[in-house]
Image 1 (cartoon, rainbow over the protein chains, first blue to last red):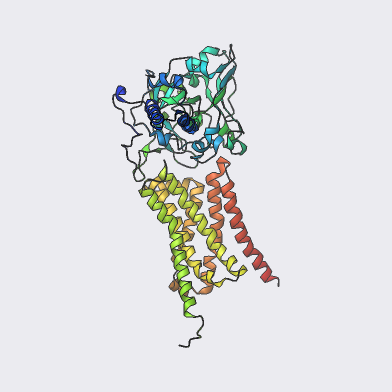
Image 2 (cartoon, each protein chain N blue to C red; image 1 turned 120 degrees about the vertical axis):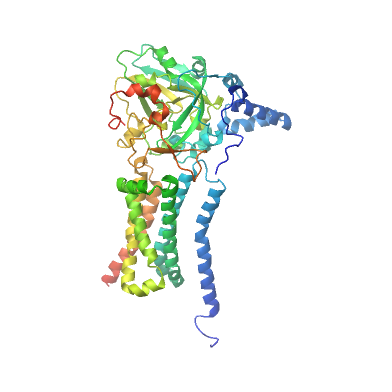
Length: 332
Length: 209
């Protein structure tokens, strides 16, 4: 039912021909300001728009519209990119409520500046990183990843960021570090969902160290050429494209290396439904629904059949060897 | 016919008009959903929106139909008895839309997959069982079926709606259980428990007076 030619959706063309969303938005904002002749007012209303609250920081924004396409194998899928509107209005971010529209509605209140991430645990150089330092730590790349939600829908998102490995190498993991734990902000003052008991806050996720060091594991700061909207996990989040979406923690405040399997939020809430690994796997069903197929948001219309889900979300060639010899039904 | 005939013909007309109004009113959610689906107003995931919305409306219709008798007796409003079968059939109608949305938009009408799903997942089995019970009630909702069964057998058969009330709460609870997000489930469970509880108390009083 959805038209594919809407202004916000775009097919892959020649990369140089694509106007990055950020540039386009910035132009529109400038035009609006000039037209109204009231720059102050325009800026004020601009910053109230939650999805683009940080767009008044062009120093951060500009380099990203020129972020180089990643050369990491598998980092650029050729699938059609999901419309920006869908990617930023249909979200799971339970800190802001359980409805898909809640994050876009409430995330504007979250303060993303100043922001720091503590990187500690079993590392030789535990440190607190400020956002500005993180932004400069490695070259920004554009990566276009499939995103498969455990609920049976999927999107295709153009992220901006760099491999998490670049950050982990700075702190020098110790030999006995086996896992990496990721902690999301849990601020009851700005996150209305944190007062509910849907999950045990703060939201904790985890990866095995070799998964965390895999070049496809992305520390993302932006999407669609611009900074992350708050509802998408601003200012910095994890993206692990071969795992169900909930493994990709948003709004990170702490990264801890450990020798014990992290107690992750969804695994604690329902251990028989959400395993630690949660690799996308069409052969292992969720207890309450099949994982064999998925609906691509905005693309697979109401009446079209769902598409087949790919093993490791289509990243088997890149990550399959991480799980060689493992029984993926047992380690779901 | 004498002018003082009871009930006066104006009263009959307004009762019929009210019933027609209720009929149209209860059709509105389905009409809205169909329109929203055709004009792409159901958000990013219209399939899920339809499955959820039709399920929600089934619950609401069920609460409404079970509320009619208590309301009629408490507020002495006999006209509500005339709406009971209609609201009951609407409950079946929304349950059918719910089952169709799931079979069509979620399962692509792959009936083998649907059957497998029913066997594999208890919450879908419970939902399916509720729909089968509602089907039996809807099929016997015509005057001829009432006459054929006889009033007593018909009433006993239609008490199966109480079982449906319990089953749909279980269905909804199982669907939500893992998310620990049970407020809506609790609201419907409380409402249905009150409506069934009122009947239990009334039956107990009738036996002990």
